[in-house]
View 1: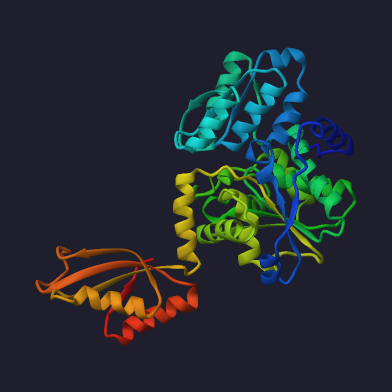
View 2: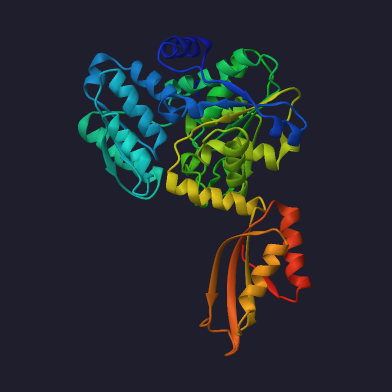
Length: 405
């Protein structure tokens, strides 16, 4: 399969330079301290529409003929590609139709509609939406703007890689959130075309990881399961075009857990003051959990691929991240049903300097004896060591504690 050429990348750069933001590289001391390597964040969450996706969408639509653009464009997306296509189509004078899963985050739906797209919600995954988008293209003549499986889309995403090389000539490795593969393929191509040997590492959510099995099989293969908070990289099968690039030019593919994604999102907020979505934090999660598996020497650049997170989901993810980081502790304690029992439990929390977030006091749980009460209490702690100290304080006070994960 044809790989991206220097001419293709130069053409994409010329098209995008007037309309795309050159997103900054931001140093991360906390990640540098954790990994023992200098770490920088490539902030594509600050790109137009909140992700890297407009790069590929604009380059693809700009490459259409006037007659093709007059027929309109159609896309399928969980949200970021949808916004990129809608914005790019509006900029280039084309109408856009977007198919999105029924569970697509509301803010992404609202933003996509605000850029002028007509939206249809179908199925539960991006792959379901893509089937509907293909059918729509065949019925109407609209041009399908695939989220990752087209050389012009890969070329647009490759401009991220070119920017990194220009901004950080000494870069030693680039870590990239990966779904269908357009971004990691583009960055790998940009590195290769610059005749550099910088490793490019893709990162997937472990619960929606089609790439490891595909690379092992030597062909794009559907994922066995798709269940992750990182909807932006929840793609069931790698694209043929990205797969050809990654197998020829990429270095390796890592996976990260849901806990790691939550902790990475929380770190970006607390320490870098950057809002990212779970998918956008995947590269940071890999640096936190697998620093020894990042090859190469010299500075590491982690791409923050998107920042379009639903505020309601953000609330849940932050709580999940706090729990995963040892900052929340939920305990279940059975105490005698007599006056002062709850005060005793709360007193232990107070003396251990744990802040009470909420308390549920129940007399009716089925496993309780007539003279027992169950207390479920969530406490705010200062980290794993303090969490252990709080549990030890309850044990020392004679309480049997069941930790609720």
